[in-house]
Length: 195
Image 1 (spheres, rainbow, N blue to C red):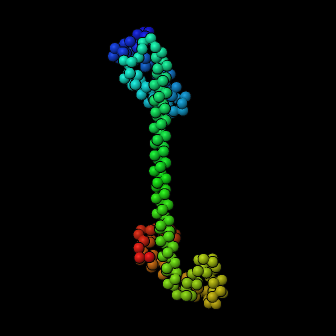
Image 2 (image 1 turned 90 degrees about the vertical axis):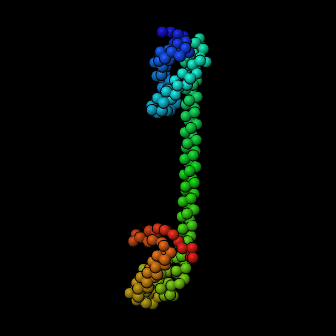
């Protein structure tokens, strides 16, 4: 069957003309899509969409015109539409990700600032020697032996001061509904607004 006859049959709503055109051009459109960097699965979908569009526009086709050029034009437009859709989708995903990251960053900053205020408050309320032992241990990184020498007390007394300071922190964290895991990881469930 000649190409002109296929197109004429298709224009007259004859499925056979369309099927013949599909057999003749579907591989060319498939490889054309692959050439643009689409996956085999995406290229198959492009082929389907191109021929759906061809069928819907069959009334406008000139049987003496260049059908192959017309198919490639449809294919190019469908591929461009696909790329535009992907760009929009990627942009939307990136935007949502940035929003989530900004939200998490803000939440973490607020939580960190609340924790820092709470730690400062607890530290101020510790008895003098207990606070000093804790600061020398945690902020200056001194060993218990070095703290004992610095404060003029026994190592055992340093250990007692540190244990009591940690107890005070745990009690305050519990009251503020902050969970501290044995690993030292802190989970903010809800920080009391009174701090």
